[in-house]
Amino acid sequence: MVFNHSSTIAAIATPNGVGAIGIIRISGDDAIAIGNKIFKGKDLEKTASHTVHYGHIVDGEKIIDEVMLTVFRAPKSFTTEDSLEIACHGSPFILEQILQLLIRTGAKMAAPGEFTMRAFLNGRIDLSQAEAVADLISSNSEAGRELALQQMRGGFANELKNLRVQLIDFAALLELELDFSEEDVEFADRSALRMNVEKIQQVLSALRSSFQYGNAIKNGVAVALVGKPNAGKSSWINALSNDEISIVSSIAGTTRDKVETQLNIEGVLFRLIDTAGIRVTDDEIESIGVERAIGAIQKAEIVIYIFDLTSTSLAEFEEEHAKIQAYNPRAKILILANKADIMESARLPIEERFSSYENLHFCSANRAADIEILKKNLLSTVQALKATESNHIVSNTRHYEALELAYKDVGEVLHAFELGLNSELIAHHMKQAISSIGSITGEVDIDEDILGTIFGKFCIGK
Image (cartoon, rainbow, N blue to C red; front, side, top):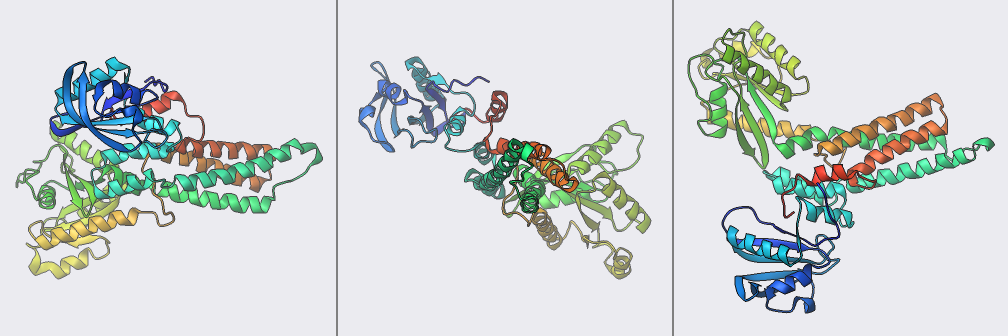
């Protein structure tokens, strides 16, 4: 992707399709001059910033549409450049007519994310805030919206900048020592330096730990419903979603592939995945379904293990539970002892048999109260994932990978202290950590290809 940062760009900012209103954005040094050539109304060259004007878009003597046009003068705009927003009628034909007119008049078609990229390059926002813009646009839950908005407002970027400044100060002292290496002078107090680096490592650790929660909130919490055939998985996914998502049958092996639906609980999005019953089978199609079920377990944040209380022995239960733990040791497992309504008369001895297992609930997909209890358990399980050590949440994979690198290098700095190694090696690892942290916010030089990848995921017009 090639960006020409000196040109004036234009793009349709509203989604495809017919709507009451459509918006076209223009940004760049010539934005107001270009707009003035096609706008019949007030002289835009004489208007103040942040003012809205009624008029018509014209192509020579031909009126294209009746519009409201908003003027933003540099530097008080999203891109910090002179910008216009044209609000016209939401006909795709009209929008395209105006866009093509702007291009013929001197504007260039914006690349995906180019408006936001200019905001970053012009210093209005840092790179992590720019990425949060895309997250906010694509958010599909209240929790995801709040997370993206927090990051867009600065989020953990300010904390990272503070850490980076501290590391730069430490590195500067070590570099100074290298300049005076022949005099064997220490400008940096090693004990104080070590304590401060340990504090930085703690902050980095907390941010890393928050990623599991942040990534789950951003993309929806993956919840795999697993168990043997006929355990009641399909009944439970239908009960949770209040819809006939999966086929419910007394015939074992009815579900042969993953069936997925979404569930929103108090603003948190869950991706429920009904899987094929896990068992050894000679059926080729069912075997593929079992493999996909295992894959779903391995990728899930939460596993709901469902077993049939009327037909499962303690030994069978323990074997299945152990296999699920082995497939995904990091997942939180909620256990549903299903069909408890059928076994009500023998409930006490059955409860004693399984009493040593946490998060085990005797329940039935036919009881509304049990369905609500499971929803509350799902919500509390997600909230428990949230790291308590940090006020900020990491949800971006690129940020997490950079934090991993920074944490590793800070660990190497502490290891070098323990071994009494020289300032040169310590300074090297500090510089590496400084670079990794700076790559998150864009405070170090970012390769054009990486920027193209980041902003290429945006929609055109943003």
